[in-house]
Length: 227
Image 1 (cartoon, rainbow, N blue to C red):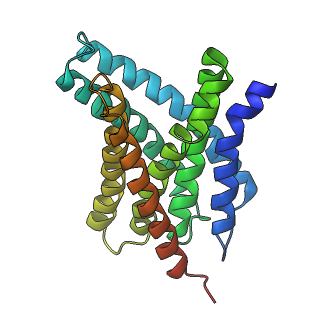
Image 2 (cartoon, rainbow, N blue to C red; image 1 turned 120 degrees about the vertical axis):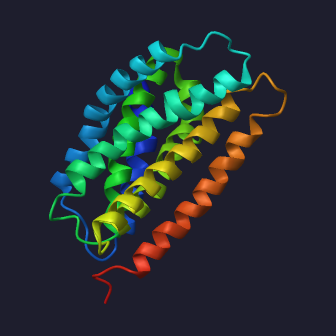
Image 3 (cartoon, rainbow, N blue to C red; image 1 turned 180 degrees about the horizontal axis):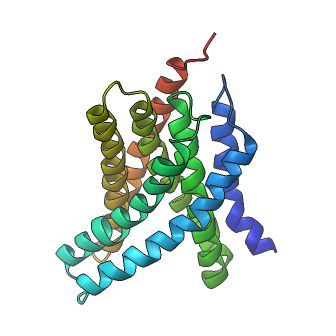
């Protein structure tokens, strides 16, 4: 139970933080829980299916190949995982009538991302123990949150775009940026056989966190419900 609580705590802390940042018109708890649950279920299933297909198409045969690790980081992991979250936000949250301001893109993308990260964290902690959970609480889980915020920022704008073309462009921009940051983060970790290179993962995470703070602030300022 202690390991389970340790695994869930980082994701739930971030969920609560984003909920509080939605200052002017908070989303229904039931809908937030639904998106969190879909992130921990449907999103995981989509990831497993597409991840398995990806590994069959392009198996990683040389763990010391920088090119293969690049493909693994950006395509087999980042694209697959972020696409699985994008699908839920795009076809469940974004279509809901409660998605009624740009900030909601951030809220729902984070809910889905934290559902995904929570289950992933539980599996890692059960398999590798408490120390792994403590490390991931300050690295992998916040990273998933930043990917969600950056994706959700653009998907929030897409909901209120004036043309279908602009909606598609903004939605895909959110997906691409999330994939880019996720891919960079994982790539530097995957090629840690190069001395000191893993620091790049933390630099990319810090940049993502800084951009996420700006994204939150900008959507707060532009809220339809701001007095």
